[in-house]
Image 1 (cartoon, rainbow, N blue to C red):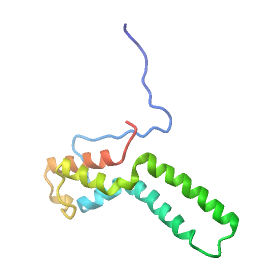
Image 2 (image 1 turned 180 degrees about the vertical axis):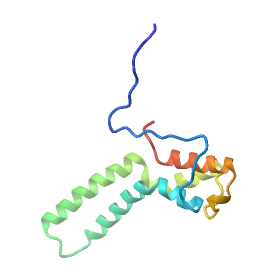
Image 3 (image 1 turned 90 degrees about the horizontal axis):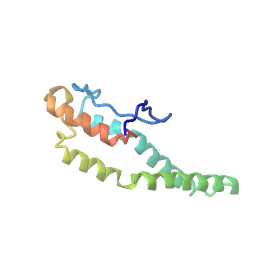
Image 4 (image 1 turned 120 degrees about the vertical axis):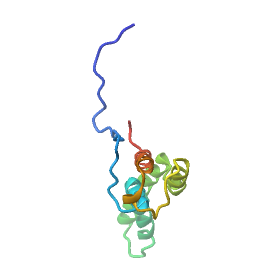
Length: 129
């Protein structure tokens, strides 16, 4: 059967793109990779912040309930995205793609190294497509 139509991503879908000649926006490889996982790290930081806030003896019952509900929602998101393993995923992606060391300056990387760093960024950003 032949199908004729238009394919469109769903609204709100995230689409990753790897250009032929990638431009790295940061000075070091580590900064490039950290930018790719910044939103994931922010989720983990929010979870840790909420966990610490729950130790405050001055919290009212309402504040405690609200914090627990937020903590549960964020915990579910962390579990769904496997963010507890974020550092290991970053390390594994960098090793698998043979990305240069984190302290390497992006200005002196070869074209192939820049592509590998850019591909690692793209994969770690976890786009829908």
